[in-house]
Image (cartoon, rainbow, N blue to C red; front, side, top):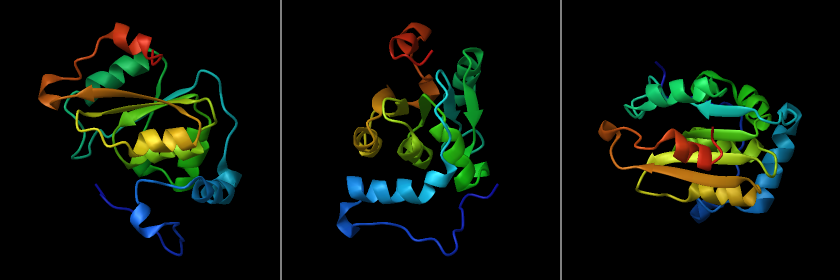
Length: 164
């Protein structure tokens, strides 16, 4: 399985030392550039970004995916999609969830008022919370201490978060 992507002739926006603290003007430039790939929001559409097969996939992920699929979630693997496909699919979602990682940067393609749920260890890095805030996307987080112990969250708790 290929672990890295190669981009040719692609310009990235950066503010050098501001990594993790994107500026709204930078996000506007990115959205304008990729706007041709945006899809219309589909009410009720829920997408989970899978890491199954990746070395950073938690051991409970297959169980979580099964639970989410039973409740109408679409599961995608962004590592097997072009950037244009990612923008198109994620921009149509009302709810996006995934394990902490680069796939959640898809928050940038979501409509204001949509919802993102980040799942990660209790070492909380706020980069996706900041992206959600800048994009007017509702942010929730589910923490786990050790993936050997499982996700340790009940269906009722997921329902309270509006995930199910």
